[in-house]
Structure formats: C-alpha cells, structure tokens
Image (tube, rainbow, N blue to C red):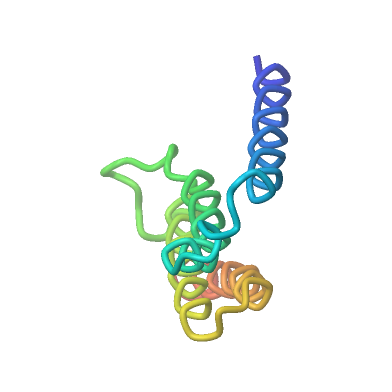
Length: 119
C-alpha cells in the first residue's frame, strides 16, 4: 500500500512539474505578460510550500485529553508557529530560500523551547 502510494505520488509530482514547465512554451507570449499571471508566479512557491507543510502537520495522535506537556502537542504547536513565521518572513523578504531556512530553524527552536519550558 505505502510503496504504491509513493510511486503514484512521485509520478503525479513529475507530471505536474513537466506540465508547469512545458506550459509557458505553449501559451502565447501576450497572455504570459498579464499582471495576474505575474502575481500568481510570485505567490506560487509560497503556496506550494504552505500546502506541503499543512499536509505534513502531525495532529493524528491528539485528542481532547492531550496534556499541554505532551510531545505530540509540542510538535503541532512548533509546526504551526514555524509556518506562521515562514509566511511572515516570505511576505517581508519575498525570498523563498530565506523563508525555508527560517522555517527549519523555527521548528527546531520552537520544539526546543516547548520541550524545555512546557514539558
């Protein structure tokens, strides 16, 4: 089950990547220079990154009785905090790489803070 899902996901990502890379050569140049397409091009990397992070949030082990000092809750809070920080940094800098580095540092820093001060 898992290996077939990974194979399907890999081929789906490859197909989407191929289509998005080939599409600009098939679309007339006049349409490519429209303002809405430029705005979409600017926000697309951040949108993809946010979707990837949202799908990887770990909330399956949480319930209404989860304690504040549980590792599962700390992980979810660190992921949400890192995501918000990534969005803020990208909004300010418009640098995807900088946002990713901040996100990685933020999730690790927030996990450390939460584990040391709340649990």
